[in-house]
Image 1 (cartoon, rainbow over the protein chains, first blue to last red):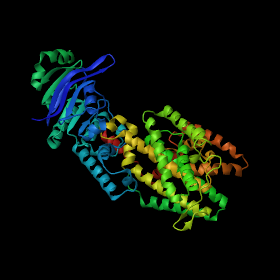
Image 2: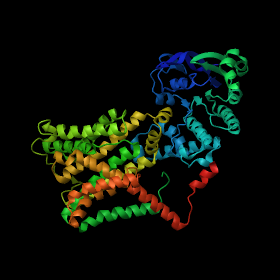
Image 3: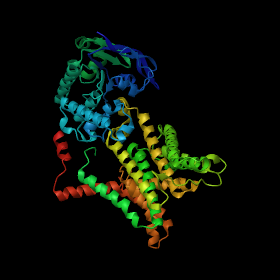
Image 4: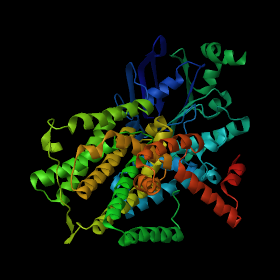
Length: 256
Length: 337
């Protein structure tokens, strides 16, 4: 199986905190990999390094065989790396439909002049962006909120819209940062179903961070565990569940 | 906002444009001159709408961008004997470049610091670049440039009515292009950038390029207005592009509501005919800036979205009340929860 994302000895430090300490693991194409660990373990830092919002201090991140070093976030997005945010980052004043059109807009190659003159090409692409956004909203079961501004929606639906916005990028790699945070158990179960459907339909590779073990254990093919910025375990869900180091660092804590 | 434009609205707009084009036929040359000024200021306010209304960037140096257009056209026409039609695109290009140049440091600034930066740019232009002795090849030195009015397709634009129509046509085209931009991709993208730059970058938007494009577009529109003003007056002197003009421009755009394109004509009319109206009722027109200041304070406290935006909102509500239709959006929002 080919490797899509390879994290190779990545370290990141802010001030006195070693957020990531020589972390290495790989995500294989077409798989859903879980990334778990207590709060402050470095999961979100790692996401930020992969999508280019943070610069790594040392180590390499390779994506589809290419070193991402020095590449701006929007360039990484165009290579097919999409993400959602733990703290929701929806375009609050844009409608849900518009939220899903923006990634298509970003990839469009036409110039501003085509838009200003409303050339046929601009109209055609505009319509296509709208259709693609609508199709995704249907796929995610939120078509009825298309016309509502993102900021006016309940948290659960905002998370779903953010997922849709990430998918509108047609990503190869999808980084999901606590997609179940703030969801009730019914919504979490739904989310698990949606993630499986996404993989079936688009073959998207995913890296999933979440504290909800039922979700992680259910959808992930294998799991990496971070603690204090270090990788302490890696393997299939059933093995991670029993791993004494992990139980001590993480599951033990949440069980208590 | 991005929906199809209704036929009635189109007809209404066409009627307004026709009326505005035809009415000055009955006026004196002096009044037509004022009309042209109003059109040119509307163009300048449009440049504020692009920058402040679309991207949320503030500027107190729009008249400096206008000066780039005006002095380039003045120097090329009067100093080098160029035709207006060749000088105009060069003037606009110079203004666009100046806008992008100001936009580069502005990328890292916002709010107060950005305002200070643009004040610095305006003062640099006013107190240094355009002062006699700094670069007379650009500023004209002691004798101002005197660009003459061009002809369009053989018809001279020297008459006050002809020139007014010419300026009005340019304003209409500029408004149409900006409007198209806003209701399509550019409007969506710029609003997205304003909402969350982080998210915008992670969906593939080159935030830097889009912001610089907005600065360039805004400065280009201001430069176009400057070039039109240069040949409208027939003389280019630094006093017409003073920093205080920029402050008044931004203040008026804010009073009218920077998010609405309709603020442009509204502010143009207010700037030119406000003082006229005052002198008509025997009040000194020097009171006009005081009135703008008062209006600005009242507006910021009472109607932060701006007069034009509020009026439009109220009209829409009124229309809904009259037609007895309830808004659909709240119902859908309810169903979604």
